[in-house]
Length: 208
Image (cartoon, rainbow, N blue to C red; front, top):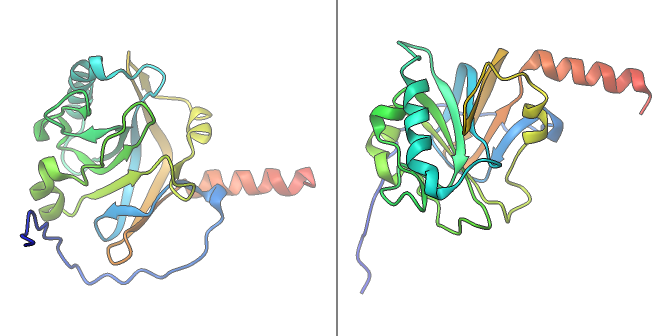
Protein backbone atom coordinates (compact mmCIF):
# COMPACT_ATOMS: atom_id res chain seq x y z
CA UNK A 1 0.00 0.00 0.00
CA UNK A 2 1.10 3.55 -0.80
CA UNK A 3 0.03 6.45 1.39
CA UNK A 4 0.58 10.17 0.98
CA UNK A 5 3.25 11.37 3.38
CA UNK A 6 3.41 15.04 2.47
CA UNK A 7 2.04 17.40 -0.13
CA UNK A 8 3.58 20.84 -0.57
CA UNK A 9 1.32 23.43 -2.20
CA UNK A 10 3.07 25.97 -4.45
CA UNK A 11 1.20 29.04 -5.68
CA UNK A 12 0.72 29.43 -9.42
CA UNK A 13 1.40 33.06 -10.31
CA UNK A 14 0.94 32.58 -14.04
CA UNK A 15 4.44 33.65 -15.05
CA UNK A 16 5.85 32.11 -18.19
CA UNK A 17 9.63 32.12 -18.31
CA UNK A 18 11.36 32.29 -21.66
CA UNK A 19 13.88 29.52 -22.02
CA UNK A 20 17.18 30.76 -23.39
CA UNK A 21 20.73 29.53 -23.40
CA UNK A 22 23.03 31.48 -21.11
CA UNK A 23 26.82 31.43 -20.93
CA UNK A 24 27.91 29.60 -17.78
CA UNK A 25 30.26 32.46 -16.90
CA UNK A 26 27.24 34.74 -16.50
CA UNK A 27 25.65 32.48 -13.86
CA UNK A 28 26.44 32.66 -10.16
CA UNK A 29 24.44 29.57 -9.23
CA UNK A 30 22.37 26.94 -11.00
CA UNK A 31 20.18 24.17 -9.61
CA UNK A 32 18.11 21.47 -11.27
CA UNK A 33 16.22 20.93 -8.01
CA UNK A 34 14.67 24.23 -7.00
CA UNK A 35 11.33 25.38 -5.62
CA UNK A 36 9.43 28.54 -6.49
CA UNK A 37 8.43 30.10 -9.78
CA UNK A 38 9.12 33.35 -11.59
CA UNK A 39 11.78 36.02 -11.19
CA UNK A 40 13.15 37.60 -8.04
CA UNK A 41 14.55 41.08 -8.62
CA UNK A 42 16.09 43.85 -6.59
CA UNK A 43 18.44 41.64 -4.55
CA UNK A 44 21.95 42.97 -3.97
CA UNK A 45 22.80 41.26 -0.69
CA UNK A 46 24.34 37.81 -0.53
CA UNK A 47 25.04 36.05 2.76
CA UNK A 48 27.33 33.03 2.54
CA UNK A 49 28.30 30.60 5.29
CA UNK A 50 31.97 29.98 4.55
CA UNK A 51 32.75 26.33 3.86
CA UNK A 52 36.27 26.76 5.26
CA UNK A 53 35.05 27.67 8.75
CA UNK A 54 31.78 25.72 8.80
CA UNK A 55 31.45 22.92 11.32
CA UNK A 56 28.26 21.04 12.25
CA UNK A 57 29.36 21.31 15.87
CA UNK A 58 29.20 25.12 15.54
CA UNK A 59 25.97 25.33 13.52
CA UNK A 60 24.00 26.78 16.45
CA UNK A 61 26.54 29.60 16.74
CA UNK A 62 26.24 30.18 13.00
CA UNK A 63 22.45 30.48 13.36
CA UNK A 64 22.97 33.27 15.91
CA UNK A 65 25.29 35.13 13.51
CA UNK A 66 22.65 34.87 10.78
CA UNK A 67 19.97 36.17 13.15
CA UNK A 68 22.12 39.20 13.92
CA UNK A 69 22.48 40.01 10.22
CA UNK A 70 18.80 39.37 9.53
CA UNK A 71 17.83 42.11 12.02
CA UNK A 72 19.60 44.66 9.83
CA UNK A 73 17.19 44.08 6.94
CA UNK A 74 13.94 46.01 7.09
CA UNK A 75 10.77 46.33 5.01
CA UNK A 76 11.32 45.40 1.35
CA UNK A 77 15.07 44.76 1.56
CA UNK A 78 15.91 41.08 1.17
CA UNK A 79 18.89 38.82 0.63
CA UNK A 80 20.04 35.49 -0.78
CA UNK A 81 21.45 33.11 1.81
CA UNK A 82 23.74 30.18 1.04
CA UNK A 83 25.04 27.46 3.35
CA UNK A 84 25.78 23.74 3.70
CA UNK A 85 23.19 21.16 4.69
CA UNK A 86 19.58 21.79 5.62
CA UNK A 87 18.20 25.20 6.51
CA UNK A 88 16.09 25.06 9.66
CA UNK A 89 17.04 21.52 10.60
CA UNK A 90 16.08 20.56 14.16
CA UNK A 91 19.22 18.41 14.21
CA UNK A 92 22.19 20.78 14.12
CA UNK A 93 24.41 17.98 12.78
CA UNK A 94 22.42 17.96 9.53
CA UNK A 95 22.51 21.68 8.80
CA UNK A 96 22.01 25.11 10.34
CA UNK A 97 19.12 25.11 12.87
CA UNK A 98 17.76 28.60 12.17
CA UNK A 99 14.19 29.49 13.09
CA UNK A 100 11.99 31.43 10.71
CA UNK A 101 12.44 34.60 12.76
CA UNK A 102 16.20 34.34 12.30
CA UNK A 103 16.01 34.30 8.47
CA UNK A 104 12.69 36.11 7.90
CA UNK A 105 14.15 38.63 5.43
CA UNK A 106 15.71 36.01 3.15
CA UNK A 107 14.12 35.88 -0.29
CA UNK A 108 16.12 32.99 -1.78
CA UNK A 109 17.73 30.03 0.00
CA UNK A 110 20.57 27.86 -1.27
CA UNK A 111 21.32 24.47 0.30
CA UNK A 112 24.71 23.09 -0.65
CA UNK A 113 25.57 19.40 -0.45
CA UNK A 114 28.94 18.23 0.88
CA UNK A 115 30.77 14.93 1.09
CA UNK A 116 31.04 15.27 4.86
CA UNK A 117 27.36 16.18 5.19
CA UNK A 118 25.56 13.33 3.37
CA UNK A 119 21.96 14.35 4.03
CA UNK A 120 18.94 14.58 1.79
CA UNK A 121 17.96 18.17 0.87
CA UNK A 122 15.08 19.60 2.87
CA UNK A 123 13.45 21.59 0.03
CA UNK A 124 12.23 24.00 2.69
CA UNK A 125 10.39 21.34 4.68
CA UNK A 126 11.15 23.02 7.99
CA UNK A 127 9.26 26.17 7.01
CA UNK A 128 7.59 25.26 3.71
CA UNK A 129 4.41 27.11 4.69
CA UNK A 130 6.38 30.36 4.52
CA UNK A 131 8.25 29.29 1.38
CA UNK A 132 5.02 28.60 -0.49
CA UNK A 133 2.83 31.45 0.79
CA UNK A 134 5.54 34.10 0.43
CA UNK A 135 6.75 32.77 -2.94
CA UNK A 136 10.34 32.35 -1.77
CA UNK A 137 13.01 30.71 -3.91
CA UNK A 138 14.72 27.53 -2.79
CA UNK A 139 17.81 26.05 -4.47
CA UNK A 140 19.40 22.68 -3.78
CA UNK A 141 22.95 22.22 -5.04
CA UNK A 142 23.81 18.56 -5.55
CA UNK A 143 27.60 18.48 -5.26
CA UNK A 144 27.66 15.20 -7.20
CA UNK A 145 25.84 16.71 -10.18
CA UNK A 146 28.08 18.74 -12.50
CA UNK A 147 25.10 20.76 -13.73
CA UNK A 148 24.45 22.12 -10.23
CA UNK A 149 27.03 24.68 -9.14
CA UNK A 150 27.94 27.90 -7.33
CA UNK A 151 30.66 30.15 -8.68
CA UNK A 152 32.49 30.71 -5.39
CA UNK A 153 35.64 31.82 -7.23
CA UNK A 154 33.71 34.81 -8.59
CA UNK A 155 32.23 35.83 -5.25
CA UNK A 156 35.63 35.60 -3.56
CA UNK A 157 36.81 38.32 -5.95
CA UNK A 158 34.13 40.65 -4.58
CA UNK A 159 34.82 42.66 -1.46
CA UNK A 160 32.57 41.60 1.45
CA UNK A 161 30.73 44.37 3.24
CA UNK A 162 31.12 42.49 6.50
CA UNK A 163 32.96 39.37 7.61
CA UNK A 164 32.25 37.53 10.84
CA UNK A 165 33.60 34.31 12.32
CA UNK A 166 31.54 32.05 10.04
CA UNK A 167 29.84 34.32 7.50
CA UNK A 168 30.70 36.64 4.60
CA UNK A 169 28.13 39.32 3.79
CA UNK A 170 28.36 40.79 0.29
CA UNK A 171 26.45 43.86 -0.85
CA UNK A 172 26.86 44.12 -4.60
CA UNK A 173 26.68 47.34 -6.57
CA UNK A 174 24.07 45.92 -8.96
CA UNK A 175 21.23 43.44 -8.57
CA UNK A 176 21.45 39.68 -8.87
CA UNK A 177 18.63 38.22 -10.96
CA UNK A 178 17.01 34.99 -9.80
CA UNK A 179 14.73 32.97 -12.07
CA UNK A 180 13.02 29.68 -11.28
CA UNK A 181 10.94 27.50 -13.58
CA UNK A 182 8.43 25.80 -11.30
CA UNK A 183 7.57 23.16 -13.90
CA UNK A 184 11.08 21.89 -14.59
CA UNK A 185 12.60 22.75 -11.20
CA UNK A 186 15.48 24.58 -12.85
CA UNK A 187 16.74 27.73 -11.19
CA UNK A 188 19.44 30.26 -12.04
CA UNK A 189 21.00 33.21 -10.27
CA UNK A 190 22.59 35.59 -12.74
CA UNK A 191 25.57 37.75 -11.87
CA UNK A 192 24.99 41.52 -11.98
CA UNK A 193 24.91 42.85 -15.54
CA UNK A 194 27.61 45.46 -15.02
CA UNK A 195 30.06 42.81 -13.86
CA UNK A 196 29.11 40.59 -16.79
CA UNK A 197 29.92 43.44 -19.20
CA UNK A 198 33.28 44.09 -17.57
CA UNK A 199 34.18 40.41 -17.87
CA UNK A 200 33.17 40.37 -21.53
CA UNK A 201 35.18 43.50 -22.34
CA UNK A 202 38.27 42.08 -20.64
CA UNK A 203 37.82 38.82 -22.50
CA UNK A 204 37.51 40.59 -25.84
CA UNK A 205 40.53 42.86 -25.36
CA UNK A 206 42.76 40.00 -24.24
CA UNK A 207 42.40 38.29 -27.60
CA UNK A 208 41.70 34.93 -25.94
